Image (cartoon, rainbow, N blue to C red; front, side, top):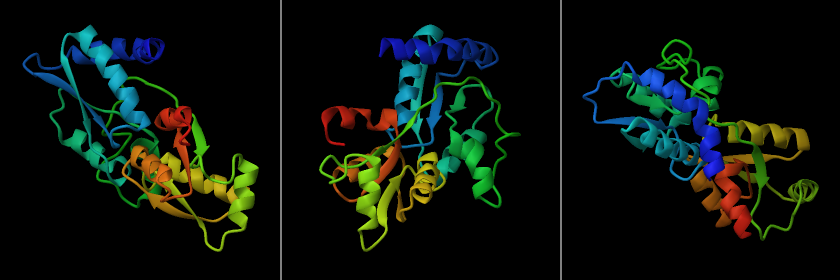
Length: 217
């Protein structure tokens, strides 16, 4: 965790210190707005960064989760906040890139309404199933899916989320049909996967790694 903290925070802190120079000294805290529910990759990474940044800046940093509508809820919340540098969106593929192609119109412009401060992390995606699933590799899952009478239930972190698009792309490439089951973040999706309510997820590694290590996925 210490190594992860140093890696994520090094460039971010310098940028935040610069950005914070124009912030109002009267503000009681800084808010990091995460577009997804607690427990997912974005939430975990943000909390690591927030803890270190709070020590370096000498200010309280609050992590606020605002899931919904593929990050639109969080983006609009930040856009409506006072533009003093104390409310920051923890952006990701969906609210800042994918949504422009998914929706005919957005209430915000990712390129005009937001300014990047720093990159935090890159996270790999993994294909995960319940540990009790009969398949234990990709080939086995594709063979299993082909024998089902209905499309397999694929969970994701929400409509338009990278875990949604990656899953659809993988299913099309590998040749099996899916029924998309969106959740407000990957963490509740993982819990439903463990509970047997869905068949597969294409999840970010930080969101699934604890369950992989414990043998539940």
